[in-house]
Amino acid sequence: MSFAKALSPAIREIRILCCQTGAASLGTRQFISANYPVLKQHNPDLPIMIREANGTPARVFARFERGVEKHVEVDNLSSNDVASKVAQLLNLS
Image (cartoon, rainbow, N blue to C red; front, side, top):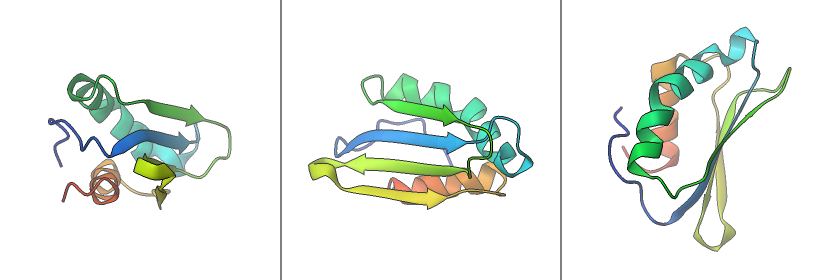
């Protein structure tokens, strides 16, 4: 999944939560390393927050217009699976 394009203006914020050392968050950390620079390059004004805390299950939240918030669980997924889930969350697929 490529994130090399501007996202919908309806997306107001993306939050990624994961554990900085846990094996269950490895795919999420790899996704961040591979895709964060591209996402920010194409969406410079979109807040993309990464929150790492010990023992936190990996999840990705998206806040849309009018305060609507959705999330997906990405614990124990590979980097490619995390990218697919995030794309579904952001309606890119």
